[in-house]
Image (spheres, rainbow, N blue to C red):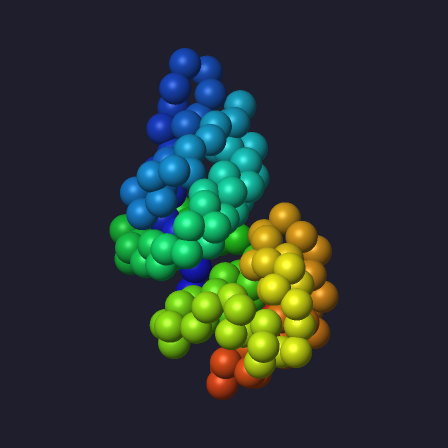
Length: 138
């Protein structure tokens, strides 16, 4: 769902990582493996800017042959999925808070990608939006 293609570019002894779909996400590492580890954090940070600005999340491009992708961590993917559902329905945070019988700061924390929300809270938010949270192990 949120697998974003990355471009790995050797750059003076390091490897630069960029995302065509999320230009705000740029990072590097000593080698490709380290660069990809840093790419998760860069992607999550960049996507948090979209959430804070109440903008739609960028749609990931299809992967080219042999191209690698990066996705946010599972908890952040769940949060971003609920955020996308809220945006698609034109619902504001205050309305979501009302539906959940929460205070608005609780909803703010739910969409804070750095906050360790409980999965049950994310699942409840999805439910009041008419969605369900699906977790799988592949």
